[in-house]
Length: 117
Length: 221
Image (cartoon, rainbow over the protein chains, first blue to last red):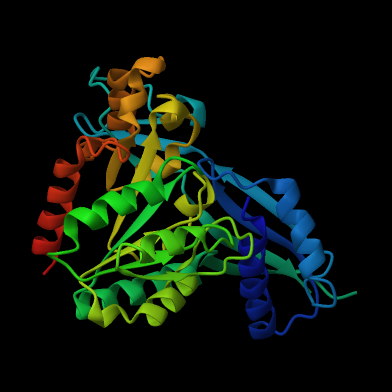
């Protein structure tokens, strides 16, 4: 729902790196987005195409890698990967403790790398 | 043709906002201004809750309110009638508040002259969860008619909140809302989060919530 400000932020960061590395065209950008985010890939690319017109990032492909939701049991330290729909419904498969987890990953909003020339 | 270079970026997308929020929190601490970010769906009762909370606390604290619900002066007017200072942010259809917008609102109020500021975020359970506003604490309001399954649909919001208010408990008999199911779902997402059942309409259950604010302000100062 807030793809526009997020996309603006992505563009600003990669333009900064493009300038620093003295490249004239960005070919692709690899993002790490946590599964907990409601960001829609298709809309991020759509806004990106719109915002990046007339910049060195025009035409760049966004490669979005989704980072799974990982929980760690606070009782036995066992970690599990789950789907978003399973949040709030689980007990630890290892020790049976009901719903006492900390979130290890799933909230990421991260630019890993970009390809440019 | 030029060779394609791989450039490591390794930056958080929201780092600008996170940094702005961190600075804002530092300023609020220096000003001893306890700011609470109120988040909920539209119609969950943010404004009614605010009116009740202000009535209970306005003799003890200097209270300010930042209103962000979409381009309507109605909420700010209602708040001003209680005698506290309110500023309306023109969010122009934005789906959330970010730290820069809250900073503008706090400057409009003058955060140094308030003990307690409520930031009424845009009614939405998705976007406000992703943007740190710089507030000291995040409060979430869930109303009974929305159902006890909201933690399953909007888990991020429930992990971000520091306190949960279950509003409109006067409507409990009319619905199939299961408080025990909600409690378990919330506990799974955010173990130990204080939860208060209230009715902002009748005033039922308001005291534990306002006591929570008093304690938090005391610990903060």
